[in-house]
Length: 467
Length: 72
Ligand SMILES: Cc1cc2nc3c(=O)[nH]c(=O)nc-3n(C[C@H](O)[C@H](O)[C@H](O)COP(=O)(O)OP(=O)(O)OC[C@H]3O[C@@H](n4cnc5c(N)ncnc54)[C@H](O)[C@@H]3O)c2cc1C
Ligand code: SF4
Image (cartoon, rainbow over all chains, first blue to last red; front, top):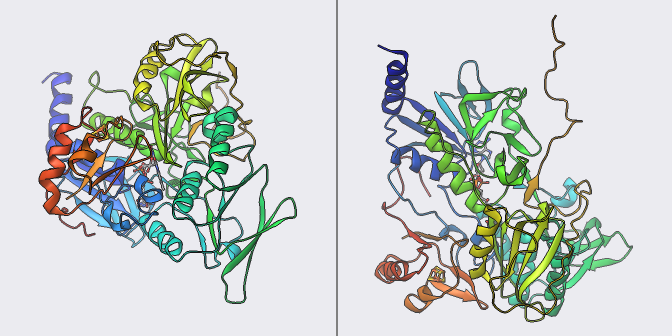
């Protein structure tokens, strides 16, 4: 048999009888499992998830669930095909041994794999002071249990809700509070809401929108401490300017932490920004060498993107989890040259204060912004972000159907300012600085991160050259 | 039944809202929200809504219930 025929035979055998383990039983994990079966993988499939629930969708949690319209357990994801997997739910993976190719579980069991997909996503950053975080009435929101608890607290008509951090999730929570007619204070360390994701120019519009809807918005401030009553219920927050806010529900929306701790000691390139992988989802080890059997997808992945100067992007977006999982799963059961790249043009949506905010591309990659359509006063507009004379992202407020147009331009590295699609142009189309905060300032945490490289992170093993 | 709407793709045309207003709602001018796990008796309505969506953003489960070993 020729070598090529032998390799092809091996792949056939792997597809028929191989063992694939997926760690993380959420959006990326489920979509990967379905794709593996769609690609003809008939071997054994094990899906490990630390939550006790089958895969559910998270975006509704901060929107229709908090509002009380949809119960938190009504967000189960649809199944697009039979995955015939061995589900290990309610048990965490605690370690990875790449020599023996085994995943260690919290209950002591070892699960062997031929190929592994890491899809452990992120978790909510908790309020940093543990005793204050433990006060009754202090919430974060990532899981369906979190959402159920917070929804219940909102339904009890609290006297005031304090939201700490005005990223997308914090802003959505504030919006729901106003819809429920609950007084809400939002404290944001950055200069405006959404500033990390969309920059200061759009942030200022988001700030006006919040204030128009009755949000007590305080920017450029931090919460220094939370104070509880004798019953252990949160009652008051002390802010960095010496003022206080009385609130009986506090929502800490401080961004997220990647679930990589279980990979410690595995020798994979796993760290603060997630697990490094190539554009095909194959994980890198700490030396920057790509592995053959370990793949990454979803919020925990960090991969180079051709459109953004090959910078490593970490994207906490729904479509990134879906597409990244499909690409990784395809590549797990195929051979070169049939590998596929994860060439997603990132997209995001957020409904808040009755406005549909959508973006395409990577806004923080831009340094300038120009309003191209509509009217800021009417909260219906499109704006484009530019970098080095080309368009790199766009954002719309209630102008979603134009995003596709901008998306095409971004894919083609079109010019900035872009030619507007010839409709409803604002009178002033002058680019201005987009006003993104310095990425080193740990205030507003954007959900697409240009992780670049960190020379201070000397986790690689350097060896002197032998002559 | 279970559905998910790809809201990156959705353009807020609201056809689904007209066809199944218990399941799909507009929040403001164009932000769609929906009940991801509607009652089974809404299936026909939801299927019609999915078929009418001009950008095919509504995905409906093709497999009944959960798999072996998966509980809710
Ligand atoms: C409230 C909220 C609102 C959102 N709104 C939007 C939105 O409007 N638009 C948008 O594009 N995106 C939104 N997102 C982001 C979107 O939900 C995520 O991008 C998506 O969930 C990522 O899927 P994932 O499978 O990669 O990770 P996750 O959904 O985080 O899943 C990872 C899973 O792995 C499990 N896990 C972690 N560690 C282990 C371990 N050691 N062993 C076993 N299991 C483990 C976790 O418990 C979790 O179940 C929102 C997220 C939240 C929380
Ligand atoms: S019909 Fe489709 S595009 Fe229109 S609102 Fe419904 S899901 Fe969105």
